[in-house]
Length: 199
Image 1 (tube, rainbow, N blue to C red):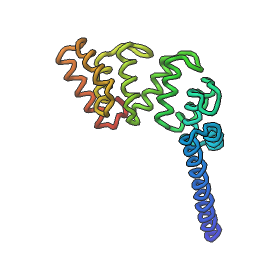
Image 2: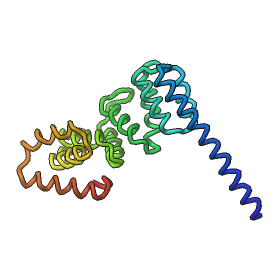
Image 3: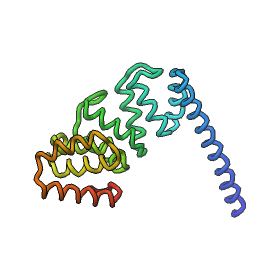
Image 4: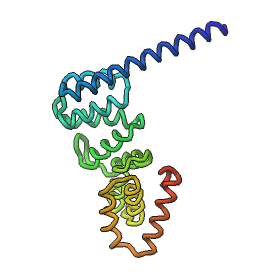
């Protein structure tokens, strides 16, 4: 019994290791095809991997459908593949899916779903999502308007190098008093300390 379990574990490791190498090779081939301008091949290779559940390939395939890279521009297909990758925790896919919901591209416009996916990406440290979450709090789209929380997210995005957030901080500062700005900065520090979770 123990011997068969050990053999099973060894076989599993070899099988999955070989499968991982094959996935990496397909992904590399897709990326090389993309870089060389062979977009049809890159999309075909990403589709193979995407259908097997590879979140990176799902993201790139979704992006391909937005930008017409080797495939026709189909927003519904982009949403489908972004959603698959987003559910697996791919931050860029979460951000792009949020953008689709925010803009109503390929789906009905839904600010609450946009906020959900922006938050998921923001919690993983994606500065653009942190900025966009600040904008949603600042405008009250999909949630109650809250300039303090907007300032917090802009501060976090700016600390992660997102330049547009710096500009928005200056604009938003005109709507807040010095006590509110201090409080927002304190909230930002606490959020950063918590690695963006539960902010």
